[in-house]
Picture 1 (tube, helix red, strand yellow):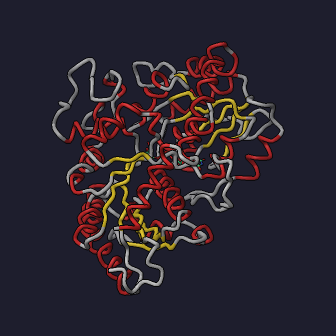
Picture 2 (cartoon, protein in one colour; picture 1 turned 90 degrees about the vertical axis):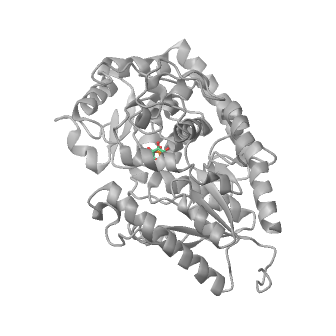
Length: 459
Ligand code: UDX
């Protein structure tokens, strides 16, 4: 009941993020877009996750931060003996503490109307429904990838894979290497595999299925999904200050688990010629083999381009001995302000692991890509980058699974110097305007967000 509320017209949404950088980012940005339209937001993740992020960053203008427990309040996932044990505990304690939080909000006179949750946490839908609230899973990965996982959930993709080609509704023909790693290297991460497949166990109860994608990027698969679910694309969740002409006053646009070397990066970039720098990053999780790291290092050097390379401190020891970390030609940092880097004129291409956030950010900012997928959804994203959106190249992977220095150098030179590179850049610029239009007034995602908010206010 809304009768006790002082502002009955404003809906209240609990937004629940899975505790990982690549999952928090899109939910936070979506929450901000809802908030901008007058929806009250309570942003929720685990006690430990919020603790591990500097509190200064949590002073997020008008969002309220709350926590639930994963059962490991002092150490998070590291505190559990395995991911399996961690998730079992989280699945037990998470729903209870989310339920308590919803009760607390109701008692404080500001009850939630809706729970938007990362689809990796499907129990949140049961909690929402038990409390009589609107429940909306938020797909943090592409619709293509969710299409594949959904078919796997239904038992319609036989693993281990035995066919040469796969044709799923709304998708281009996929080879085994274009499938998410849990399928292409079946048995590699059984626990995460189960996690992604379980996304769909209760999805039939969802009031909405929100997707961090752009209709124009994945038209056919979105059309197909809209026939089976109340799906709406709301992406890209790139902060509006990087996209819109409207430039929101949104200084604290992100929350970072790592300390970015902002000043070092921007100073170094500022004196570089237009489109002369190769930006290299593998996101917040991927771990490269020492051999791959060495090949990448020399490939970058041999390309003769400037490069800005993010090597997280946990990866640093794998850099080849004697590899220069900071010079006029090259800068290696442990974390950077990626959106500012990708928006910078000096950046000419992005060597990426094809995490979905990095992929959307690069598409939205018009940066050509070199795709070096590592695991999870990244191989499928790479396939789309190269063959569907045509905004990048994928270097050859050898029989040991390593991308050799020559292949890396070749792709960099193709993008930075060749006619083919120009075509790819033109495609990238085309996608940039499509992505911007989607979130601009009247665009596909903008309309979907409007619709979501309007219905919330009337429910
Ligand atoms: C993970 C998975 O790998 C990804 O495939 C999935 O879709 C989401 O969860 P992650 O590996 O961290 O995420 O990659 P990505 O999705 O690209 O997210 C990384 C985020 O960190 C991006 O928003 C990026 O802008 C940011 N980032 C990365 C920085 O701000 N600075 C950096 O130096 C590197």
